[in-house]
Length: 248
Length: 248
DNA sequence: ATAGGGCTGTTGTCAGACAAGTCAAGCCTT
DNA sequence: AAGGCTTGACTTGTCTGACAACAGCCCTAT
Image (cartoon, rainbow over all chains, first blue to last red; front, side, top):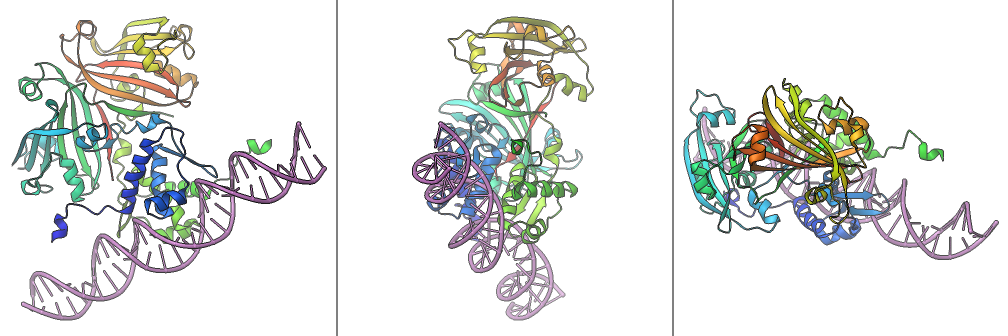
């Protein structure tokens, strides 16, 4: 039983290595050489095979460059930055990486039937009753509100009870921790919108201020929508970007 | 000498496996299970370790999904289909695909020294004189302006003379046609901004209307910035989206 | 001076083994 | 008969140790 509640989830060697190695790479300059694999493997406490699998993911991401018989090097930064929008991660993690501390305010959690828009977003027929968990909150940095987020999740995936007292505001993080259903990708629509009276108050901006609006559908591997979210961002605090490949 | 030109380069086991496995995956349907690793490794004539490294690249690309103790499966094709922002293409092409006809208005072409912001965007030092080609225009659908674009390209890449009389407004298309320099990717920043007086007039929207602003740097393969562009989009005409992978 | 041969350090690949997770069939208990 | 538990087969995850292939350098013989 208690294993379901275990909070410090066991991270597999691969994941640990991915974290540690990622941090190590971040601390190096482009072009710098990594220690040889046997050394690195011993330092990290894993086998060379495991280390190599992790390294391959970094190579695939363009973070590392390997040269047979020579060594492994940190790639140019250009693509490293590519961890923009293409990887979905909790806002807190994103903020943390650039050294910002976030707090959650105006947290509102309720179970209710989905609205028409939400049903559409969740890929559910309009005529059925669709009970969902709705989590709304404002993310602040210091005293400055920077984002207004609302997640809507069908009760089949998450209920109010699943949000413990220590819920810190990230629905995505919670879903990832549970590991079920398996999440694959999020389709995020991007648009601009003027702040109406409600958002002006909540985000402490003038009415009519331009906000960045992201509408996202989080898919599981069986292509069901697990989470429908609408987020508003105050310009200037987060730098969203995306790497676009040229059609070759 | 001729070994430098040898065409049929010896492909390492990993590369061969990548090809063969890629073809095999393409021939399967989403959700189908691959043979177990030991079997597959023997069939492909490589060790399990090598096979696993190849598989990991496919996992990283989102083509395969592995479940410990269960098996390896072909991921849903969802992500491949969605040509969102991840592929850079001329706006006209994008519009054409959804059945819209675009026209170019207020086209302005000039050669001039780059501004400070533009120098920064192009990755050039602020103190040098940097002559650039600047192309500004408004894209309309019918009589409705939908986007305001400005491309800035160093004269080393493109001059006013290169834009023939039949220039239709897409700098990207022109660069692609020339094929030189080879383009790799574009880093696009996304933000929201209120329309000032100038853009309100050009885009025929009220002052203060929320616009989507994309600032992009187009890189060549040697990581030089070929094109620095700033675009403003009127909400509601284009639906930008991006597929975001879940960090697993 | 220069081409060639080794030496050393690195990544690439291999083989075999065991650990850990998943699932279902079958046994046992109730 | 129903439900829970055990067992075993199957799969991916990780480990160990070894050798092959490649790049770069110094040193030598020509």
